[in-house]
Length: 187
Image (cartoon, rainbow, N blue to C red):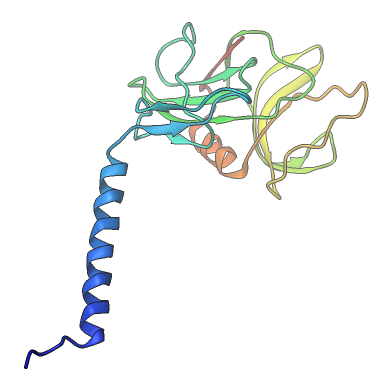
């Protein structure tokens, strides 16, 4: 008479086999190109160009040409994006922002005053305020809302110079943007 394996042995064997297949597929998938989100309506693409050192809170993108060299903050008005670039030209972090209604002119600026926390011109409690420019009597500064919210739509005719970002991005910019740090604004 032949011994029949117990049902537990079959279940254990199948579970181990299935787990091995899933792990093998996960390892194989992790080695491939990673998909990135594009603009609305665009087809999905794969990109393996992201620098592992950079922290990305949105789709990967490279520092704009003509944004200078060396350690700096790059702010693109058109992309509504900021890059924190170290002295070796490596992007340490890049993220999207919500600009105010008053934008600085393209050019090179320096971080001036820094304020740990205050109330924004829209009445929202903000922190990590990094001033770097002024235009038409309006100070332009990076900041984030203390509660992590996006800024409310500005009132009609409001002139705001706050460039808001998510809380984690605000903390990273605050740590990076010491007084005198270059801020390059590009179209």
